[in-house]
Length: 192
Image (tube, rainbow, N blue to C red; front, side, top):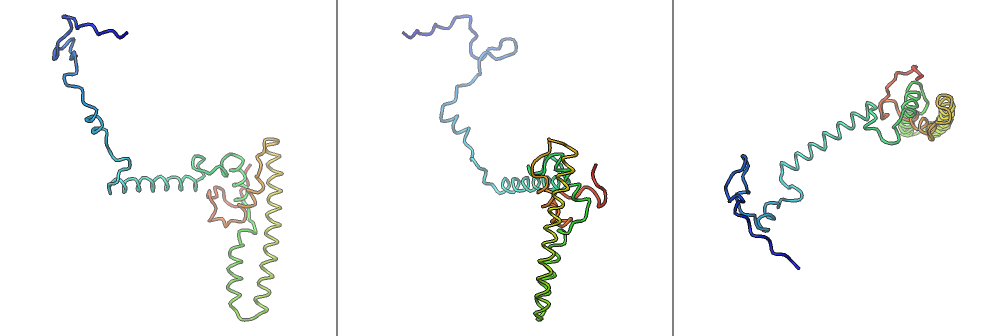
């Protein structure tokens, strides 16, 4: 059975009185449910032009910061593919040398230009030269992959990550100024 509440005692402070510098009660009526809901109402997504512009500017600033951090090689902004000391070492090792793969794009542009010359022999030999060059690039990629795996095995032993050879080969065919993260070492300075 439900008990009825006891009547308030006569020594309880009355409304508006102050005990020890603190009001005894809140001094106002409890808001109705409708009033509380009205006070909480706000749009889920602010659709004001200022809010949209501010959100767009914030997002652009975050992207610029992430892009600059990735280009600089900051671990916080790198993708999972590029994170870790072994990947950094591979990047530095590849960036410190010359690779045939860096010249693939210029060679292809040259072949495209040569195909505009209306001499069949020039077109034929330019395509044959391009295919020969591509096979040499594939050989250089394989050689780079093997060397990186061997050096990484010597440096880290059994704790070598998988995919370092492929990572090195793919980085070696990118033109140096297009690589991300940007090269941190100059050519000729092999990492320790």
